[in-house]
Length: 262
Image (cartoon, rainbow, N blue to C red; front, side, top):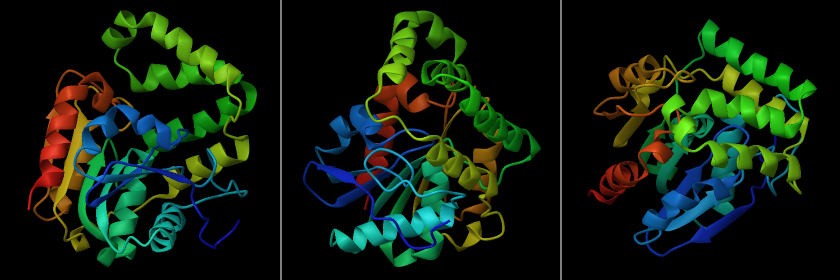
């Protein structure tokens, strides 16, 4: 397990104040694409590959969200970004919390999407099951498992071919996430715990959640909202964990407007 910050691969898009985009479990920075189309009109967007995936370092785990937050901080330093708006999705939101707590001067605004302060037994079971299934599945089979957790039934029904294509794409990936990277990220999710420190987050914070989320349930975001001073909680009522995709236009507008506020 490496305790030293891992230099993260990133791509920049757009012009304006810096916006660091921290992706969730098992996905690289390119998955922000449909959101960056909105954000790049106002911000210089940094699409980060987290430790353990994409073109970033993939050391053996376990990882922690504190370690991964330090990766982001070191990458900001290397890129000459002294402070930035930060948006984090799911695991990325957990990393963003730690970044705001460990490196408060680097964070001037926070967007937390489908995330949590600490895993309860239910969520620990989910992540542990993911590790177990990743070890015995093909990449396509495992993609199917993830899709069933993050999308609503109505979306999957309406986009059946897209879902099938995502599984085929996973099997055909030329740079799949190695098992050690995935397991390291799962370990970071399981051990994440900011419960007793959330009141120390002092920057403007927007929390978004899909009320149909079975992966990081609504109660997780309500807890964050109750304990981060002055935070705002926006519920997307037609969607689940990936409400930022299922209600893309509304999500992009809501988050862009918040990020642009003085």
